[in-house]
Picture 1 (cartoon, rainbow, N blue to C red):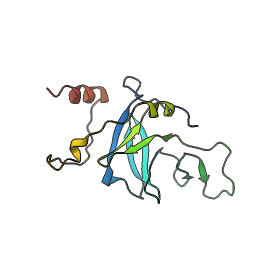
Picture 2: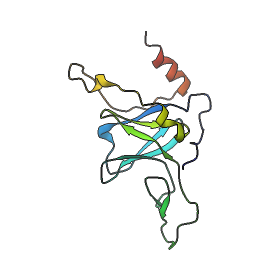
Picture 3: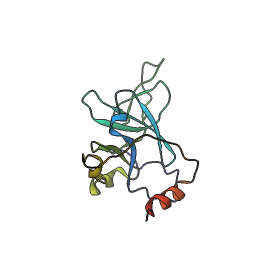
Picture 4: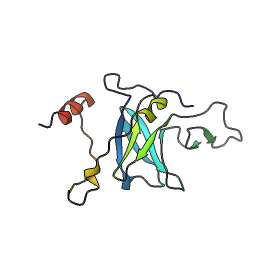
Length: 145
């Protein structure tokens, strides 16, 4: 079982789902993101499942559960080598990562932005970086009225 995720942003909720990417952004090639200050890599397995891992060492190979399965120039993988694997879900619009204790993810379903799949609504996508504290952004987006 994975240990709880690293806490790099102590003043925001961690026992929550965070949108990390649009569904169409995540493919077989690794996609780098930051979730609450933690570098994360997203990709799809050959069966199409989304995997979210804390970014590991360059060149090391990891299984979807975070276990290291290969190290360049070494015949054997060091005992205990692994990265944090995040619970993840893809709702067809967004890929969500559970930022907290993985054992609690099943108790709280990810938000369902059904309107993003509704043909009566129009939307736009894309990603941008904002040079602001995450607490300011959460406050800003939560108070849209």
